[in-house]
Image (cartoon, rainbow, N blue to C red):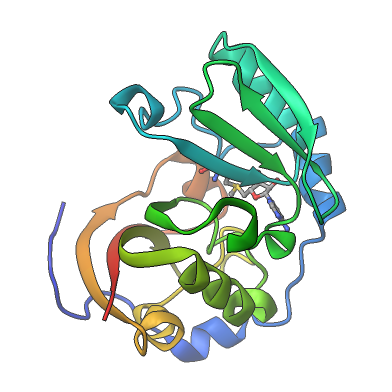
Length: 213
Ligand SMILES: C[S@@+](CC[C@H](N)C(=O)[O-])C[C@H]1O[C@@H](n2cnc3c(N)ncnc32)[C@H](O)[C@@H]1O
């Protein structure tokens, strides 16, 4: 593992152009869940709610959300989301609210702003043409003391079309740098079986902390 607060590693804005017109549709994501083509899925989950937090998630696939409650042996209730298409699946314990809707329909009017955001597999899954819209949404959901952890990845974009998409350091700065102080917390070698199968010979997982200026 390497740590640095500076720009580092492979950062190739020209490489990012190779993926800029790539689009993965919502239907294709739903299909991935239906066919279990979900190598990104972490079955253990992250222990946020267990640490006493109120957790809110947004995901387009209803089956993914229902699987989550089943895997975690949690009962849940369903309700409509006022004003947008989709539904809210809420644990009966009350501390986990998962919105089954498009992230692009989600707004702070639904839940208020957040004091912490964990972006794992989200910016890197958003189509490159939607990144600006996505970053504006995230910024609008951050309250003034919010800490946002953002995970990205670096690899040779001429060898894999994504997702996950290649998001260089320069792009993170372009998307969030005007509004946020950005600290790179770590850069970890993630060249596991999956990226190797894609034909990659390096794959860095990069973790940033974003704090509003
Ligand atoms: C790479 S996966 C990451 C999932 C999860 N965050 C994780 O870390 O395991 C990207 C997820 O985004 C979901 N997704 C794709 N488009 C979406 C959209 N417009 N709104 C909400 N979720 C979406 C997909 O169904 C998929 O589960």
